[in-house]
Image (tube, rainbow, N blue to C red; front, side):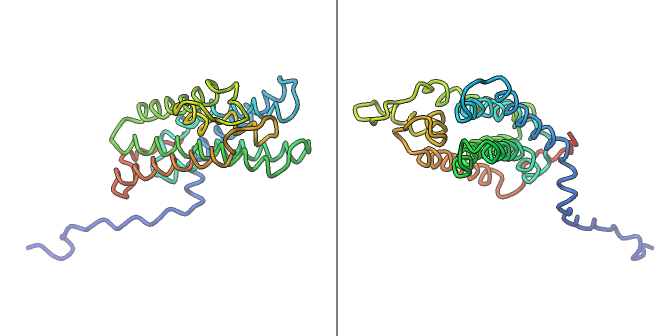
Length: 240
């Protein structure tokens, strides 16, 4: 005869982890992200002989490559959306902190200009993080998810930043084709140049910012809709 003690016990719901444990779990990936961004910035300033704004423009191109390659790598293994944001977001936060330090020490660019550069770079990072969560939500492996995200990041770098690196006519886009106009609206090279006071841009920097904000909103909305508001399917723990 069964007793009450023999009845199967339902597992107790897991309590939310304290924030400090979330940060501790991601510490290695965050450290790698910070070192990658600071290394890129340091190498540019150590090897480039131009002015501070010119060095920062080159550093922006290097940082976009770091976003494409390092961001998916450090995001891999994040069990939850918070982990992905914590790991991947550290890539741009470290770069933004470095640019602010350069602005404060050299006084060759203003803090406002440094913040504009950081905002532009952060929106690109948010686009890549949204792509990562979206692809992972479809059940793809971690390696394939990181690979697809890297391809998107490289396309962002190799498209507007390099193909249009020579810049558009600062007098305007009259008479240009629709394709050229669309590229101008996503031209990170021109936007960063305008932020740093190096060249005029036919599209204001905040116009380019809005393009990437809209893109980030689109991919994150798709990720949430696909997942039904739940966390991504891949919940494997990775302490990297």
